[in-house]
Amino acid sequence: MRNSHAALPDGFALLERGVGHPDAALLLHSFYQEQVGRYGFAEPATLDPAAFAAPNGTFLVAYRQGGPVGCGGCRWYERETGTVEIKKTFLLPEARGLGVGRALLERLEDQAARWGARRAVLETGVRNTAALAFFVENGYQSIDAYVPGRDPAINRAFMKWLSPVSEPAAEQVAFRWPA
Image (tube, rainbow, N blue to C red):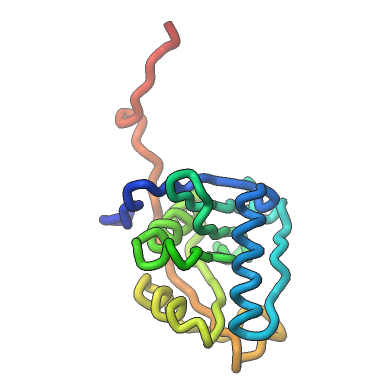
């Protein structure tokens, strides 16, 4: 189990949303536009809803004072090897540098560990130096591309071993019978 978690800053919340939720769609489109601006092209902004919903995955939206400011998803990549893939982690510029990204990433990793995943993989682009540094600072190690056909001049793949996360012990969970 982790010894520490990144605290979500005051005024922020992380909520599970379907990838088709209007707030998720807005953020995925913003992410797509940023990638096109950075590279001249990008993967489509759409994601397979079934891949990012239980029992296959999850998708989170970060909110600041009720407005969507970030997102990220996690899905099974290879169940046989206990590998999940982190996808579409993105924050609007006004939410960057506040600790929201770290809390979002840790929540996705913790969820994957609860599913029994042993490692997480992800990709980012070489021109996104902030993301490259962020993932390394958060324990990710560079690996060979895991997606066939990726251009190594543009894409970088990373991997992190996940620590098991335990559910709260029964005696720690408060329960009351309905009155």
